[in-house]
Amino acid sequence: MSIPTDLKYSKDHEWVRIDGDSATFGLTDHAQEALGDIVFVELPETGRVVGAGDAFAVVESVKAVSDAYAPIAGEVIESNAELEAAPEKVNEDPYGDGWIARVKVSDGDTSHLMDADAYAKFLEE
Amino acid sequence: MSGGGSNLAKTPLFSEHIRLGGKMVPFAGFEMPVQYPMGALKEYQAVRDGRAGLFDISHMGQVRVTGPDALGFLQYVTTNDVSKLVDGQVHYSALLNEQGTFIDDITTYRVSETEYYLCINAANRHKDVAHLQAHATSFDVTVTDESDDTVLLALQGGEAQALLQPLTTTDLESIGYYRFAQLELGDADAIVSRTGYTGEDGFEIYIPNGTAKTIWNELEAAGAVPIGLAARDMLRTEMGYALYGHEISDRVTPVEAKLMWITKLDKGDFLGRAAVENRKVEGARLCMVALKLTDRGIPREHYKVVADGKEVGEVTSGMHSPLAGCGVAIAYVRPEYAATGSLAIDIRGKAVPVERTTTPFVRSHVKR
Picture 1 (cartoon, chains in turn brown, cyan):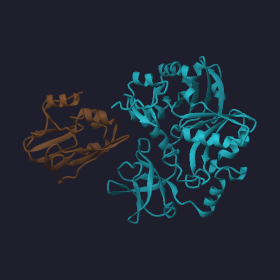
Picture 2 (spheres, helix red, strand yellow):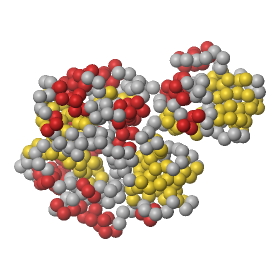
Picture 3 (tube, chains in turn orange, blue):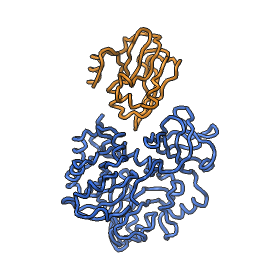
Picture 4 (cartoon, helix red, strand yellow):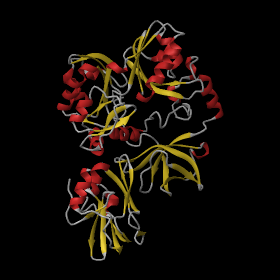
């Protein structure tokens, strides 16, 4: 189970990479593994404003439909259009090519999120 | 992830599913593998691309009907014309109640004129057996539930025959589509039929519990790919095959379910016949339609079918079809929308347009 150290993690199993005033969201390796083969991602539209904990995307596996929740608040500036044709990238490369959306950060508070060590412990619980 | 309480039954192959890393889920009262580490999509692919998939479907029930009145009894309790079966032949059929709606869909195997073998759905087993035994009192027949003693495997896909042949001296080529043979598989007395639920060539294999692990492991070692429930459902939905609890239930008759081809009104009286005849005259209350999405999205069970801004039906089975390259669905709609009018499926509040199509959604490769 891969948990990169440069990311922050939510209890809902999303990751966020903060880069200045923008941030990238995706699903963790644990999340994609638990969901199984992902066959569809409903991406957020550019301009959509999401609060921390709001559903920002819908991820569908063969058997289940799941919401993905924004780890921090922001306004969507880009979605990963590659996932329309290749949703399996979320399974294959959850922290890289499988990213889901980029936002302009409106509230950079990450005190409710976990670092890699804390997330690893959270998964063990 | 591996859930399931102690009240769930286990098939004799449970330990093999665990050894293979199967993700176990509750299904029809059993703990069954929903997928193995390969994942549902690759399992599906193994069956579709000419290899062979191996399914444990032991949760399904088996009932033996024997006695001088076996034929007359089955003519009365099932919808298809049992008199048309010859020894070694199977057909698809159904059990109806007096209202003409489904108790179950089944397959009937004719062993001889006085002996038949029925395969029934797991979730309906006790209901079916009670129903059959209640009606058996008027006939000279014995109804025996053999479910607990029988393992049912399905071996499906282009390689199925090649993988199964080394286990028996019977020439499998001699078993035609919807035919079966009673033969020896290794040390096991087996019933092997050229039937299935995937749209590919292959077999369903009935064997005693004690022999199941050996046969499962031999087939797996020969290259058969273990397949879980998720891929099984993909394979059957792509073929448009009905599943009890989805397309068929005690709320619809064969008229709605497009199963009049297994409901022989001209064979004489049978349970539910009068009600089905009435429904045929009145017309179906709902019509089953096959739909494919013309835009992105995945239709799923219980999603609403909409037209003219209102709800006109409901999806009973839906999926993303890897081969068709789009979302496909089986749905019931109000009769006036069966053939005409623009339809859409409501996916999270968005009306995604669909076209009517026919099943199977992708090409079948059964050996007719």
